[in-house]
Structures are given as structure tokens and as C-alpha cells.
Length: 122
Image (cartoon, rainbow, N blue to C red; front, side, top):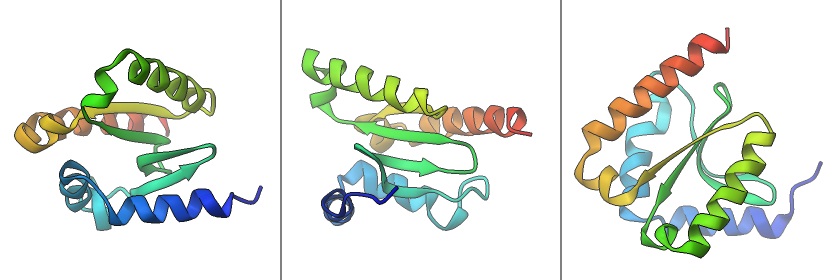
């Protein structure tokens, strides 16, 4: 299936306009720095663009700002998560302020989740 060129272009734009939290998380995940896993950022899983994706584990990481706390945001996120989980992907979400202010807690949680996924994928 060919991906929508507009979606790919939008993902590229999002990579160059990343939030502080996304930039920090990318520095931690890129180049197999985290558990020797390959992550992609602003990866297209049509019709969505996910913040971070690890194909090996089928893991999607979403970083959420305040707009995700609204009723519309929660509804959209639930619909999106349901869609991704139907593709047999695991979705984890972290708040931007936690990535920026409590990085150790976020990484500890992510380490635990990735370890569990590695064990079940064998």
C-alpha cells in the first residue's frame, strides 16, 4: 500500500517542528540508544502519524500536551489508540511535562514496558 505523499510530507514537517519533549525523547531513543531498539519518529501509520514507533516491538509512544486533557482530545486519543491496537500495536502515552521534568520515571516505565514486550515477542 502506497502511503499518502501529503501525510509523509506532514510527518517530515512535524519532525522539524518538534516540541521540547519530543526533541528530548528523540535524543534518548535515537540511534538505538535505548535498549538497543530502533525507533522512528513522526512515523506514518495511516491515517495517523505517531510520535515514536519501534517496529521490532510493535510499540507506539505518544507524548501528550495539554490539548490531550480536553474531552475532544481524550476522545480522539481513545479512537486512535483503538485503531492502533487493532493493528496489534501497543500504545504508551506520556505527558510532555513528565518527559521534561521526570525523565527518570518515564524511562523506568518505558524500560519495564519494553522488557515485557521483548519477552512476549519471542
